[in-house]
Length: 180
Ligand code: HQG
Image (cartoon, rainbow, N blue to C red; front, side, top):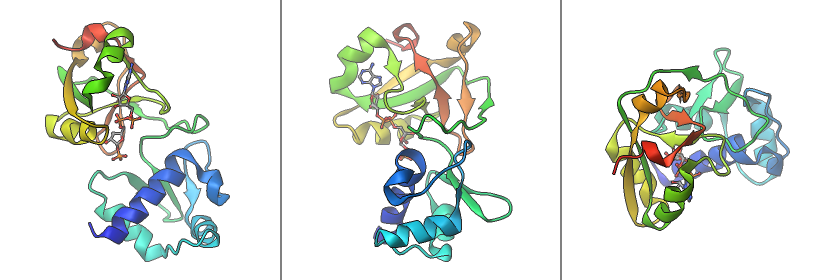
């Protein structure tokens, strides 16, 4: 993706997952924003976003971070929200035996004590492949990939969800389900 696309993608992630109010935007309960309103609000803040630019960023997003509604009028982030009022009706799924979580080595002591916590986001994010987890961990520092006994967790009553882009979500991961 070009530098401009990455910038727009980060901007969309920020306003659609975390802080729509910084540009005067409101999201509905399922996280949708009206695209025309988004364009107007962004422009007031000095950010030029045309409809075609937004559409190509959505289509080319490496992780398929965003979705456009069937009528083409609304946009939302498919996962990653910290906004508590957004309640996406994720599909509950039976997870594979193992899922992966990339983090930084400096968090390990705290994770050992508390398990994986969602922190400011609504969910702990897990992936079905190790490479994605390495990349996620690198964002925080010296990366380490934790293997999660997801199926055992599920069998003990923990719920797993999957976002439209394949990211796995759980409210928490107790440390006992992290492989040695
Ligand atoms: C860590 C990206 C201390 C956790 C990715 C992580 C992902 C703890 C950090 C999505 C902890 C939170 C989310 C505990 C968890 N003590 N640290 N008990 N429990 N942590 O950014 O998973 O590219 O909120 O390990 O692909 O890094 O933006 O979560 O290191 O799917 O689309 O606390 O964001 O997607 O960091 O990333 P984050 P994350 P995008």
